[in-house]
Length: 283
Image (cartoon, rainbow, N blue to C red; front, side, top):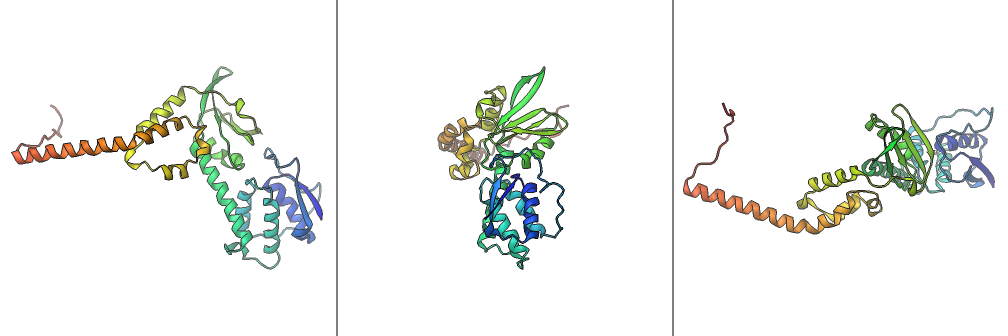
């Protein structure tokens, strides 16, 4: 068994995997050992060995796209799985990534989907809090990702909130935007995140005003917003009472509509003219 140490990033894994493929090392002969454990690196790529030259070879784009995403997954077996599939692709199964029923390909696709889903959840459920820092306002958010999607998702926040100075803190790694560039630092505990601020009141007001009791579907809501996210969402404390009041609110809405329809029918029966607004405006 060959023990292989590498930086636990896609670039780090790729550099080492390329060398192993060229040397003809079969998957069952490798023990993958991420340098420093599975703690995420801070975006530093592995060079695969100082001064070493490795013959280039072409890999299907589909595999590379999926491998980049799977590298953000937190399953420690992902590196061995990726190499096993790569070995097969490079040894006679060129179209393997098109075989979704293959158990190893299926596992990779499930990992890719989980990472994409977590990235989507990060975009949807990050909530910034305003703090005063060095004479200005800095916006800080706390998020607990299931997979290490911080670096992958950072460009979205840099573009979306380009005019703000912000930080997103997570247990895995943290990302910061100073108005010009993105930087990363090691993960921190939740105690480093700021307490509630006035922005949370705005979030709750907005959520309550847009909540439609007639379309409340608790099951679908939990599927889209799993309970593990609720503890970090300021509006989450409103969900239970809003859902509790939803049936009564729907009944009131129906009763109000029924009353208005009865009034309209009564006016028509009595031949009363409808109230028509002056479209030309007052003169």
